[in-house]
Picture (cartoon, rainbow, N blue to C red):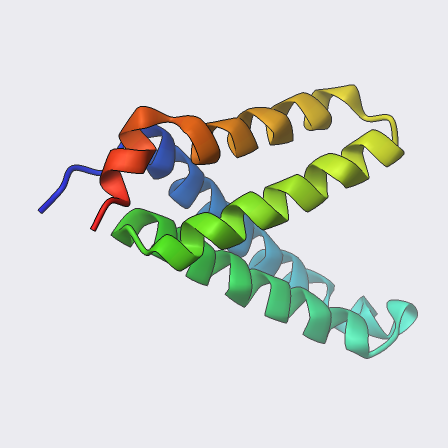
Length: 111
């Protein structure tokens, strides 16, 4: 079995932490969800579930997870640039570059 590159481990764990934060938020804010509308909690749960799947896919070396990660972090990069949030734009750009061009990532996803 191939060794998971450190950067992919970090991204996978980050996705799981985000999932946990979403779950805690939905449970903690559950009674207040009607302030935002009933669909607010449902959307957060779907995003949390998708984030957990992405993290697992990255950890397990699934090529679909790499492609989805590149797409989602690229979209986040565009959103950061539109909002003129330089910090998150730099982070998202680094993640996209890492997933796209890193030699260790390419080797890990090689069949």
